[in-house]
Length: 113
Image (tube, rainbow, N blue to C red; front, side, top):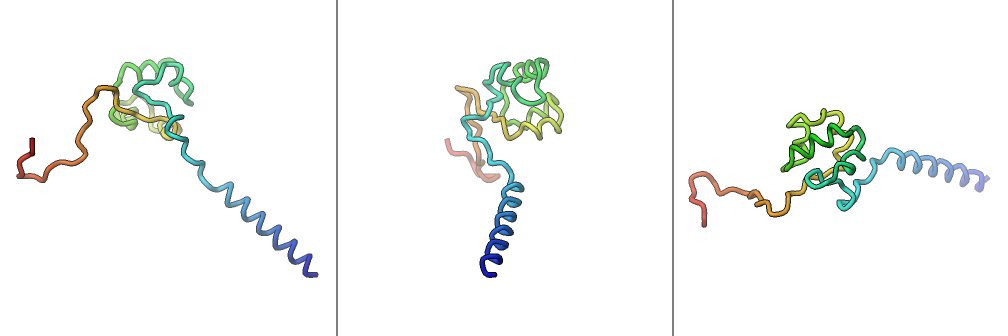
């Protein structure tokens, strides 16, 4: 009797664990495997779902991008397509670009030079 209850309990636990594992979102890909929209080749861009020759060429002509969200803001791709590829792309600053400051001095105070 005890063995039967134990096996039923294990079956329930395994079923619950499988259900939980199936509902977890997929882990984000490592940064190295992301496609940089500022430097990717036409073929690399075309490997993304929904990006064909025309959109790949438009992305290349619109470079550089400060953020990957500019793909939608500049109307290069629709928002629904962006939602599908957002976790596969990144917008690294082009080499030699001056970084934008992340903080600003409070208003009314002079900047330090």
